[in-house]
Image (cartoon, rainbow, N blue to C red; front, side, top):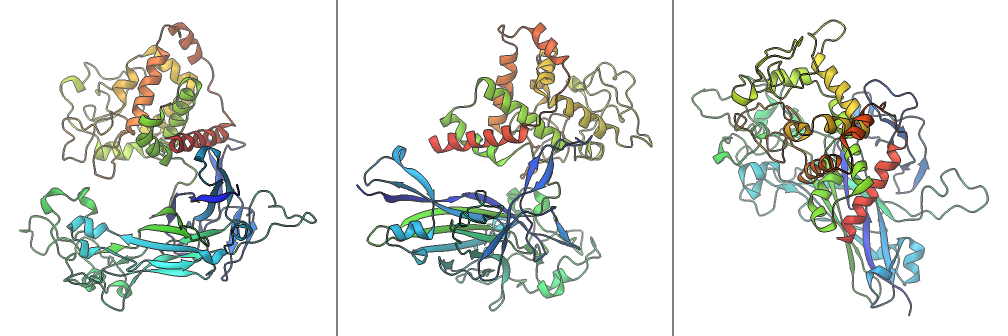
Amino acid sequence: MAETIQQIFCDPPISIARLGGSSTPLDAYVWNEPANPRADGDTIIMPAWSLRVNVDGSFQPVMPDSVVFRDGDAIRPVCPFIELHAWFGEPGSGPDTWREAPLTPDLLSRFGASVSAITLTVTAMNRKAARRRRDHDLVFGTFPPVVVQGDQTAFVPLRGISPPDAARLMIPPGRHIPLGGIQMLKSMPPPTSSGSPAWDGIVDTSVLRFRVTPARGLFYGPPRAARPTSESPVPAVETANAFLDPDAGWFNQSGDGGGFVQPGDTYDMVRPESQQEPTPPSLGVVDDTCEIQVEVTLTPPNAAPLTAHSSVFVAPPDFAPDRRPFLSLADELNDRSAARAGPPNGEQLDDWVEDLFERIYETVSMMNVDFWRARRGLPGLTGARIADAAVAGDHVVPPDQAMGSLDALRDRDFAIAAPSTDVPLPLSEHARSRHRTLSGINELRGLVARQPDRLKALIRQPFEVEDGEQGADVTTMRMPPFMRQSNALPLTLAAWQYDLVIRWASAVLRPAAPLAAAAALSAAPVANEPDFPERSAARRAAVLARIKAS
């Protein structure tokens, strides 16, 4: 029997766009191993093949000489491309027999369809104020969704407005907040065999794709927000953006709200004229971040429509692009799927732990530990948290604050010097040096062999909040120290990550791996591993394969 299109899907199904005020999008780049590793990082960014899009939706693949993040003061936005793909198979066949192929005009024509059979239905929404007030009327976005046909290749703006049925419109009639836009690109036939361009075989120009462009990164508010406040001489919004209705339910609202707004400092506030008010009221400001959901529909002749979905999360710029976060999107997916798909084992377990500690090092390498310890270190340690004696030769003060010389969690073998002209941030320097060493799997094995309970004592359990941390902006030095998650609680590893590390440490201590052998491994020098980008890519593929299988 003849094959049919069984399913369509978007690649990637989840992506992140980043705000930027420049009209030129950021070119693509990849993480790589530097030829001459720096003292403060193991990764660099290198240009990758990018697409330069024209007004009419045509484009040219280019390989930039460098990666440019700014045009003057304007940051270049990250504008993700989403490709359309399909699964083919005989009618009634099982998914295990299907084959994948990019969706192209030629492929559509085989089934009597054209690009016009594709429809994009785009919904962009910002729900921040609505969440903070528990008031749906404060949502703004595309009402109704924006519809783009597959052969419509001009840029289509996404305009945020208030819900038409809102009791009072926060965004007045005739006004809108720009939320970026979307553009379907033209398919370009593959090059001929003669005179093939450099990108031939690397960039598939025939596949159908669209690009999402985020907004500029601006703030909007009522007229009052365009005036200086007692907290800041600089107005929160520009005068041109101060057009929101102050009586719509967001401006001048109290931030207590029964405690449902977390973290509290995201409740946009201004000091009241009278200090008798219990909490500062909202200044009524919103931003142009949003979530953009794209539903792709393919309607072949004489067949049921097929749909696919892609979610694009619009976020602020990444100011450390050559560092990988220790909590990645892959880890978040694993945290939700590993129970069904099964965690890694054996050498793959080693790979995942090493990858995690490499990324932990990259995170701490850009952190001012001295500043955050002074600001968020739990003061006045007592009881089991205080050691009998200070670390010999240590100069971290005050000694009874988290990570001080009397903190029972401190490793007694490492004394930290006082700040000096040469080393003004000694805690930061020590954290980088120590985590760089532990980013090698052999050294990490040695630590577990020497101190079997060290990792369990140091690493905070998922969502764990200790005594003295509740309702306060302070933490102990449990790892990761002095950092906060989105609900203003101490940041932790994902449950999947934590279980993986503890299971790995237990495996190191099994009789099959004698402590003497593990200690010998710890004496080995920490090796630079130039293949780690390939290993990271392989682990990413393993994550996606497990998720698909589940």
